[in-house]
Image (tube, rainbow, N blue to C red; front, side):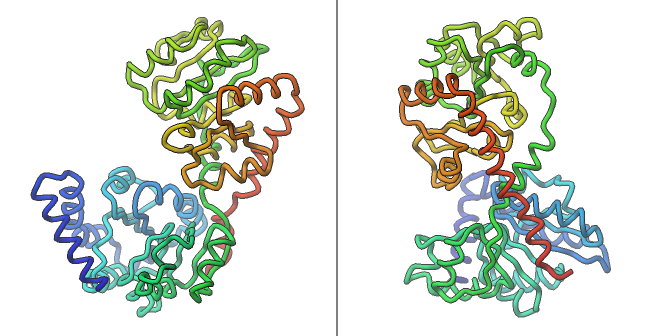
Length: 407
């Protein structure tokens, strides 16, 4: 039944490609190149480690482990596969992988053919990617196979009555390195015992990104002076509706806004909603930015370097589509504020519990929190310390996993 479903999926992809769907066309074109790419780029006698990430998000979670492994074991070569065109296109030139290509469809033939050609020494599946035919083939060949940064809960198909046919695939893993105890417990409830709790690799990624932050002279000049700086990152209009009333009625803070969308209409909306002196990052000068009250970031790729210039941060999305990446701000050692829509993430809950994060539900609540930080510097300092400590104490996942592998 599972394999039949794979063939039906392949047929649907081909039909979509015929009707001009770009992603389907890219996927098929990538699949046609898989084996020619391997034959062209593989080195005879080399030892390969195979990493699979479904898409870009999974790749980012597995990246800290790949890079740590590549650094400590340069004797191995790395092959990285993707299922999603978006993941492949973003990482096809990734320098820590010797070969990057698409993952074949999960048929018995492709599983056998791919593994016969690659002959990996180990295989790593990032997050919750379960490829039944590949996992069976890996186990049959006695190739150590691991799930990293995986998270499981009772709502997933594996734990439903109709998901029984996928459960044996979970037992094909040599070990599943999961994020938390709840994932371990739910796996053990279906008699999957080869599980170790190591934490979430996203913390490692946050630390790595923080170590590579850029010096931004314009932002540094803006942050000079006695006034504290508030950074609103990945904000939407809904977020700004909550934040702006406070900043329009106080002169004790400077404001940096890095909106999620940076088209001209959104930038003008921000400029109009803010009553003080607002300048755009790409259009301002050092002299001008020093006397501004609001700095609008009108380009992408800077936010991870900007959070460290703030005294308090807000991560957007919590009043619309769901809170974004809180770790990117917390790793900088600043208190992190966020809206009520958490998008299923546990980071918000854990940040609140440790004192490094604050959830706000209205403009009034936001103003109250900001007044408290302004009037009580020790509270601000404690929250900042808690946020940084939260990330530091939960990082080191890659090293934990490496210490448990036999090379």
